[in-house]
Image (cartoon, rainbow, N blue to C red; front, side):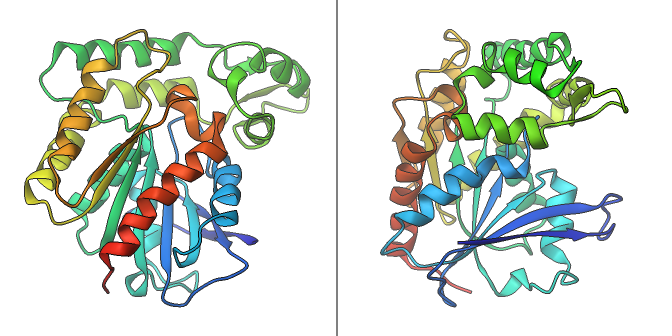
Length: 302
């Protein structure tokens, strides 16, 4: 497997640079699928390396052309997929969108607002798509907002961050290599003192959870896809997460909505909690392969 980082400048309404990692399997097929991965809030595109490695080691008979992990804001993803300045014409690829947690809301809105980016299928991993109009959705968004605002965000050194994150919070369950990846790419230098802070600030993360755009529009987009039943949607969900029942109604909504589709599927992953792509990358890869098999068997188009 070969990997390369791509960077494009501001374009197509996105005022920022956009980065993406491309992974090309040892056996790449010109007529294979191109997978686009979108990460959770407060993470980074490199977080998927373990998962992608495990997936490509056992992907046969599914044909893969390449895998991309994109900085997953809506504007950034659209800009990267629309330009050809990086030498790739994504309109000529058989695209499968794969998103985890908050990355799923961006993927939902990408396919809704920019239908010119044509996906063959979507795979949602424990998506942060909340059922609209439910008190439980307000409470869960409020919980995430509070968690973001109150968590520690600065450490005197990278080693201090490593010691604390390996013992507390969601990161303590990460596979060791996934934690090291977060320390390298999820933190940045504060100054020359050696102190580090979150690359995605807690204020930025909290603003996402407080936004109405997190709830109603992505859920409406998922409901519409379910009713249309044309674009395959495959859900991978962990029912045993760390939110002590507060996410039960959200996940029941997702399972019910996707479960109604004749061209979709639902898989329950038994371990890893909400962050199962980072906690159990090999197990997650097996579930992704199952979904990709269904997509491949159904056939794809350009």
